[in-house]
Image (cartoon, rainbow, N blue to C red; front, side):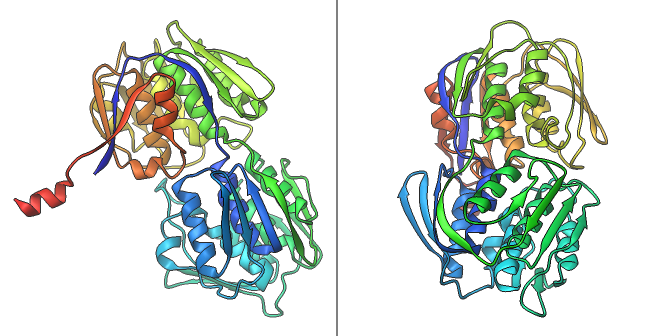
Amino acid sequence: MTKYQIRGGNPLHGEIEISGAKNAAVAIIPAALMVEGVCRIENVPQISDVTLILQILRELGANVRMVNRSTMDVDCSHIMNRRVPYDLARRIRASYYLVGALLGRFGWAEVPLPGGCDLGGRPVDQHIKGFVTMGAEVEVRNGLICARVPDGRLSGGQIYLDMVSVGATMNIMLAGTLAHGMTVIENAAKEPHIVDLANFLNSMGANIMGAGTDVIKIRGVDHLRGGTYSIIPDQIEAGTYMTAVASAGGEVLIRNVIPKHLDCISAKLIEMGVDIEEHDDAVLVRRYGPLNRVNVKTMPYPGFPTDMQPQIAAVLCQARGTSVLTEGVWENRYRYVDEFRRMGAHIQVDGKVAVIEGTRFLTGAPLHACDLRAGAAMVVAGLSAQGVTIIDGIHHIERGYEMLVEKLAAVGADIRIINTPDEDSQSQVG
């Protein structure tokens, strides 16, 4: 078994370069299915979720060529197979974007229900509502989302989302790009990766207006052409390293970021006593003194991101006083709490509210990463803990963080990958 070993207590000093945004990449790469010609996509993060999406595209008949580590050419001109492999789709949440892309281009899609982290109920009903409004017939059977358009091409429609949903907003945007007429999404999500997807599609010939606001209008076009596009930096990766500095102390310049996207994270860290200095495409994060208690509530963008909730909790465990953390998006995001308690954290959870009483220090412990962001938070906690922290389940973390160990080690963290015997294999041998 491959695990992370962290020996805490080292302040961080130096520079960290942020990779392309995971949440943008896993929608933009499926969007290439709709393009006639070669898409050159730059600033692509080298993470396992991207690897899976690319595997799926290759299975469908796409030609994918790596230009360099972070740039690829994707040509989906000759896609013939429209059935997405079950075993691959079940391993990634973002596989549902294939429905919007395939339905938009071919008027037909058969995609397994998505996998990914278990954060509670994450239904696809709003996605289906949008597709049906646009003229598709959709049913879920045998673990598959089966969608078809009787006359072969979707038609624009007026869609009001019952809840702010990033996935539904992006999926309907994909479907509407090649539809007849105008599609309007009301109560749309406003996250940076939604704007990035719209910018990608527009650069390939789409006509999308209003991305980043709560009303998005898509005037359908007949086809998309090839082109070159660079993915935005990852807001959550940057925020995670900001919390790592807040946790361990020190001074780190975090490069290749859009500081505006980090405002909601920066504001809470500044309130806690962390010094943050903005540059054009970087933020300098310093923390030398004690941390102050704060209250945090996660909300859709531009509020504090739910994907940063476990990481900020790791920092709050060390803050003076009692903090209140409220989860405003997902119902099952506190599964990491028992792991933090192993480290000596004082956390009580009641529904969507966690009360965190700061402690003078955490202690190293064996931990299990139960999902992507929880795993990242365990790394953040381990950086400041006394003693050694061992984290297993690191495949979750590698879904969203490129070269996490190398980036942290380069700024002074004592972190490395270790291999231990597989416990199941050992028990069978015994």
